[in-house]
Image (tube, rainbow, N blue to C red; front, side):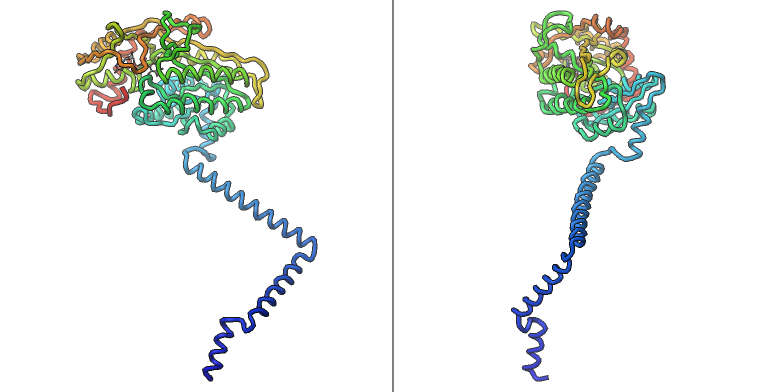
Amino acid sequence: MAPEKNMRSLQDELLPSTPGKFKLEQRSSHHRQLYRCFSSTSTMFLWALFLIALTASYLSFHSFIDTGNRYLAVSWGGIQWERQVRNSAKTHRSGGMSVLVTGAGGFVGTHVSLALKKRGDGVVGIDNFNNYYDPSLKKARKALLQSQGVFVVEGDINDSHLLAKLFDVVAFTHVMHLAAQAGVRYAMENPNSYVHSNIAGLVTLLEACKTANPQPAVVWASSSSVYGLNEKVPFSESDQTDQPASLYAATKKAGEEITHTYNHIYGLSITGLRFFTVYGPWGRPDMAYFSFTRNIIQGKPITVYRGKNQVDLARDFTYIDDIVKGCVGSLDTAGKSTGSGGKKRGPAPYRIFNLGNTSPVTVPALVSVLEKHLKVKAKRNVIDMPGNGDVPFTHANISHARTELGYKPTTDLETGLKKFVKWYLSYYGYNHHAKPVNN
Ligand SMILES: O=C(O)[C@H]1O[C@H](OP(=O)(O)OP(=O)(O)OC[C@H]2O[C@@H](n3ccc(=O)[nH]c3=O)[C@H](O)[C@@H]2O)[C@H](O)[C@@H](O)[C@@H]1O
């Protein structure tokens, strides 16, 4: 082949011999195809259908990815999960309740859930198992609940999708709302955790309750700390509660106001319970009686705060079994919510009760009782109470709860701490070396 001809054939392969013409021909053939395609209305209609189908499948693919991510990120959802929720919520007595217990992995939540389940009510728990204190204790409580047929969902009350799903799966008659950021002094360390759980979480939960059909009756944990700097003794529900001494107390007081608005606007039945320093088996390691016990056993010193003018601090310590009776009594007597479709249909009850013991005990006296039960002398380090949000004393007037709920505490501190120490030693033994907690 002559070199000149050879070169031309290579050019023929790489480039169009007449580029302008080639492009023109391509375009006109493309136009012809388009013309053919859209030449009839029916073909155009088919194209439109095709485009709609394409868009729809794109959107549903995205929502599938979204849902998938949600299910991958959290530990709830699916047919098996829904079955567990439904089974756990089933009542086993006539006229039984179906209760959603928030904070079920917590101290009071565990005890209330067990009591309800035992008498045949349906119970579903929810807890985020955060690490404010040793999560392994919370997991052990969960295992205890599971052994009694109470299913606990791992999730946060700030998760509105989860709450909507739960109300979708079960028509809860009641919500026992105990999930919260607890602890008076920790509020100075981590203020936002109180806003997250006690304000934002509460509102998310109330939104779910107000939307649910039927609306459940809500019983929830407020706190004796709302009395703040109140000096009138004993503390009555009608006393002033606008002088909180800690952010914790302020968020609980805010909870009382927030629940009032949901009662007023949406017809939610609300019962707020002001708990007075609850203690007992399976208790909270951040509380004084618990951390004192651990330190006394380990031979470590304990810090005992003392109030102004060297006056001992005192608390109306209340035993868990008495508190459980108050909670169950509140659920039993809670009137119905009146709203539906997110709208109020009539007035609904709004109640607040003190749940205390009515006999305050000083902190040094508490230590003496522990020394007696543990048979070990405490190394007391007595210091003036720092400005940490503590109040000098608490003392409940419980006549309102007695009349309305039949609430009657029967366990004194001596007896209650004996039961606590027995549980503590059986759970941890004498060699408990847990990490120090927030006290
Ligand atoms: O009744 C309530 O409303 C509150 O009761 C407890 O709060 P608190 O009474 O402060 O209970 P503890 O933390 O167990 O303290 C009891 C007493 O021991 C004192 N204390 C605490 C810790 C410490 O190291 N030393 C010490 O003397 C405190 O000042 C207080 O007077 C709970 O922690 C709150 O969640 C609850 O809302």
